[in-house]
Each structure stands twice: as structure tokens, then as C-alpha cells.
View 1: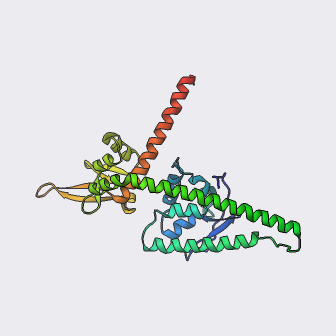
View 2: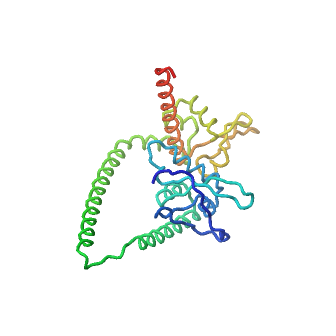
Length: 285
């Protein structure tokens, strides 16, 4: 599913008791980012930010699972943006939601997707005249094509698993080094995090500040509350002297993976911009 142009959608108003609110769009069961925010107890702008983060991964075709849309707020008549997402889009987004409540709502959404997909298949199934030879021939050819497509998918999946296994084998030394990097509570300092992801420390610290992941306060680099609450960072209070303490930002295991993905995306965007600038220079634009 490609990221289509904006379309106006409405959300059911009976959201006093949160429940998954799915709607069929072009024959596909779709969830609404507003309903996802309500179900998981999150601010909608934060859910939108997470979706845009997924769409910014250049090497991952997440765009086909999300569709930009708009809605009119009946309270003020203003038009706002939101996203519709299919089952795979929801799975990608909800992957980062943790906790007992999140697990419960993930299961609710999965059940809702399954129910709607079953209903959509039922609606799409044509009535077959078993006495019509032409219809039976078309049905048989369709089955043959489906079997061939499934065989191709199995072959592709087998190939992907082989590559994944090879990658795991190659990354084993990195994983051991990663474990050694962490302290006994599973965290590391920002400088060690930069070294682990292969980033120049000066460039790394400039980037995490400009990206709004951390901020400066009284000479200390502290994580933004939002990312601390999501488990990317922790703050460790260190005793400097008898009456002096300092707060140190620590990166969690989850946060290290999170930072690495965003750092690589940052480098990719920089490389793309540099290439574009070079081509413009060569063309004299």
C-alpha cells in the first residue's frame, strides 16, 4: 500500500470505553492513529511522531502500510492530520509500546483486524456456479497462480532467513562487545553509546541535542522526559563530594538500539543531501 494523498475520515464518537476502531479502506482493514493513541493512553502528536519516524527509515518501505488522512474537529471546525494504517503498519508502530496495558490492547487490535479481514474476505468471495465450465476453469487457473505465488514467497522467505542467520553469525562479536559495554544495570554513558555506534563524539552530542533527545541544564546533559519515560534513557545520581551530586544520563539497551537506528538514518540523510548538493554544483544549478 503506497502512502496515498490526504482523504477526510471520521472516528466513531463512542470512545468513552476505549476499543479498537477499524474501518475498511479500499478493501483493507485500517486502524486510525487517533484511536491507537486513545487505546494506548498516548498523546496523538506523539503517535504521529512515531509514525513519521518509521516513514523516515529510507531503507525500510514502511510507507505502503500507512496512509495520510485528515479529520475535522467538531469542537472548533479545524482540520487536523492523522494516519490510517493496515495490520502490518499497526504492528510496526505498536512494536515500541511496552507494558501490561500495551500487551492487552495489542491483542485487542489483532483480534479486531482478524475479525474485519474475515468479514472483508466473506464480502469479496463471489458466488461460484459449479455447473459453469468456464467459471471452473478460471477458478482452477487462479488456484494454480496462487500456489505458484506462495511457492515464490516461501523461496523468498527461506532466502531471507538464510541472510538473517548469516548476519547474526557476523554480528556475534558485536553483541559480546555490546554486553561488555553495559554496566550491571544494563546502561552505558552517552560517550560509550557514541563509541558503540561508531559516531564521532562531538558530532554525536551535537546531533542528540539538535534532535531534541537531550537538553542542557545547569551544565548537565539530561534526557527529555518523553524519551526517559519510554525507556530509552535513565538518569543516575552520582556523588561528587560530601554535599555535591551530579546527574548523569545513561543509555539503556533498548535506547542504544534506538539511537543506532536514528544515527544511521541521520547519516543517510546527510549523505543524500551532500550528493544532491554535489550534483547541483556540477550542473551549475
